[in-house]
Length: 75
Picture (cartoon, rainbow, N blue to C red):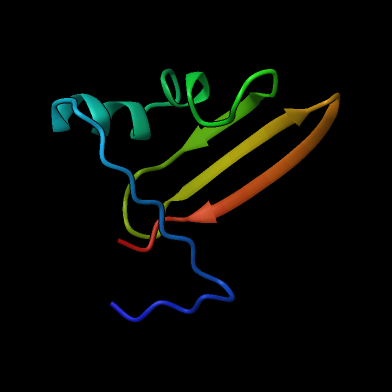
């Protein structure tokens, strides 16, 4: 895959946990808000449609300011 550093974001981490659990955490509206931003900030809204072309929409609350992050799953 060719990535454009001006528009594409790639997140990579090594975590000692079963892949099935990690996938559930990254793709579940129930779980993603619990770890996606560092405390004391938090995810106030989360909408995920995990499929190519689907949406990844989250809203962060940072010091009382709402910050919308809207994205699309490419693959």
